[in-house]
Image (tube, rainbow, N blue to C red; front, side, top):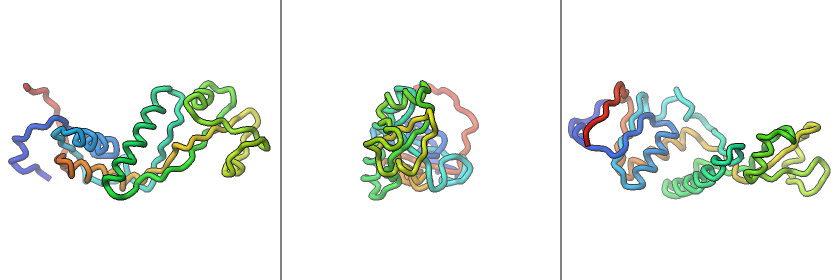
Length: 184
């Protein structure tokens, strides 16, 4: 869909190319901070060609890289804010379980990032849901309460609607074929 001629003369602070989950979140975040935002999508807004569609995507805060868990914890607060603003939920909080070789450096880093290592089978305390898993010999399990399941397509639509409500211009069927640096 071609942009009306009046939009061609508009100046934007932020132009986001790609209106999947990441792009739509970025447009919402920029618009919520007062930026003039243009969100462009090559296909229809809720197309099925990328990874931002379907019923579920997982979110977790257990990563071996130390910079990820704090970002995910902040993101969870921002998800809660967006859902409150939208008036409906797209993220269902669930416990998250990681399994791995007990001495694996990545598994140890997950535990160090804040996950709780579960006691061996038969030892206390263990969450009731952990009884459903048999952990292989030499392996361990760690749990976190900051897991969740995101309804991906519904989340994309939510962030696009919130961005538009905050003044972002959202355009689908608009292919970006070149980016040229301009003068300010």
